[in-house]
Image (cartoon, rainbow, N blue to C red):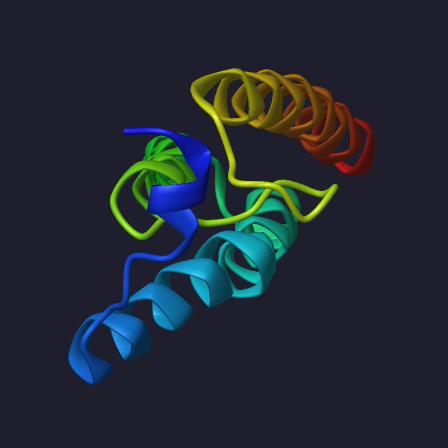
Length: 115
């Protein structure tokens, strides 16, 4: 399917609403969940950190999956307003994973420093 026909594919109102929700998830809501989980990791008791770590990485994977669904299923756009490609999704996922890993390590370092 070429880019022109992909852009002109009309979506039903139900699919359009779902597409907007998926975009909202990976652009905003997912990041808010990650920030909340990072804060909880810092202030949590030692026994619950493992659960929060698992939830954190599941949230990161969920955001990456939402970005993939936006690009492939709902024909989302890249930052240059062109249809998103698999390369855009891979670049986003790599950046998300690296930044999430950095802040996860930082949260654990801060937790260890505060104890």
